[in-house]
Image (spheres, rainbow, N blue to C red):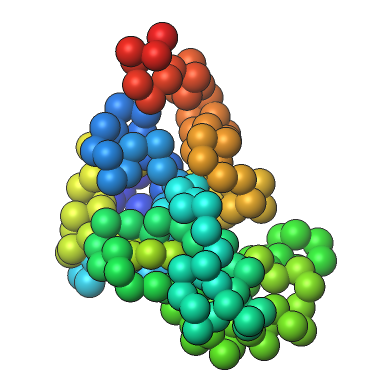
Length: 186
């Protein structure tokens, strides 16, 4: 195992996939985009693969006629679920550089959507948060699988995103990806 001090310098801009044995309903089979992290302040992120099958315009009438009204809404995490966080991201033309805009205003997102056809926008209800040292402890305890950001993982929903990250980072766990979330369905 790597030295924990260098291992957790900053995980911002990484993905976390829930380990197949993580059964907490808030995070089971989830993929989290870490938007902020430091060992002393904790971490913040949003769950990428829990769409609520609504757009921002359906959720909030004030956005119905705006370009942001078409933005899909996702359950971002168990903290502050009534709060709406807006995010947008894009890749450079070679697909090697990732640009994230997180916690942006509706006006800024509207401008981005009108000027950049390649931008991907999301609205998140709530977020995931960890206190000082909490996430690092959960990673060491194998609750999470760390992964680099990859376009396939960001654009997939539900189990496809989660399974893709787990299979890519931990092929030894691939058999567990196909186990139904509810074993009674077996």
